Length: 153
Image (cartoon, rainbow, N blue to C red; front, side):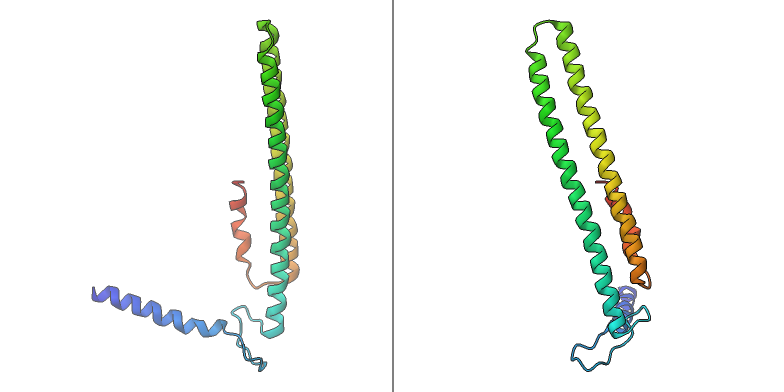
């Protein structure tokens, strides 16, 4: 129990000691401490604004691509539903089977194309973000290491 208390107190002590490294002047006196990346004042603010713009652009593009994918998938599902309903109304078994296969093939092709378009759009958004963040010149961009999270979309 004493060891746990000691470890927690050390963590809190070092945690509170590092807070001052990231402090900014909120009183407007012009005095700022280093922001942890070697930049002070206006430079740090410019990096923050630049990175916020890069994130906004990237994520807006991904949201737009996802909206397009969802609309395309919905359209493909509607077309599939209508085609399958029509196919099941065909009396001839061989023609019905051909129509059902065609409906599924058309659906598969539409979904595959929609996924491909979405992946390309997502990649473009991340590539644009990487280029924009290099212009911002942040000391270390942690946001790049999370790109794989979007791969699950």
